[in-house]
Image 1: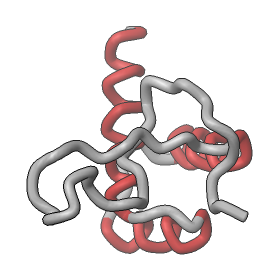
Image 2: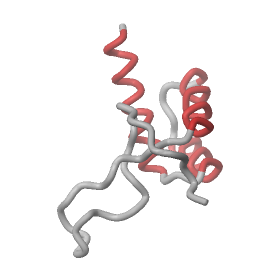
Image 3: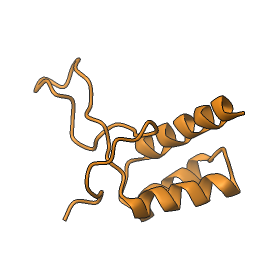
Length: 87
C-alpha cells in the first residue's frame, strides 16, 4: 500500500510525495502529507532525541520511513515551531 496511512489532519504535516497540482510542474501547491501513526511515533521519538537533524540523519530517516527528505525537514521545522508556541 501507500507509505503513509489514513488521512489525519495534523498541523505539522509536510508536502505530499505527488507533484504540484499543475501538470507543467510550475506553480500550484503540494497536497498535505497524512503521516501514519507509526511515522508520527518515529518522528516524535527522533525529535525528542535531537531537535535538529543534519543531512545524513535526515537521509537515513527518510529512507527508513519511505518519506522524502523535504517531508522530514518540513516536519522538523513545523515541530520546532509547535514547541516554541507551547513554551
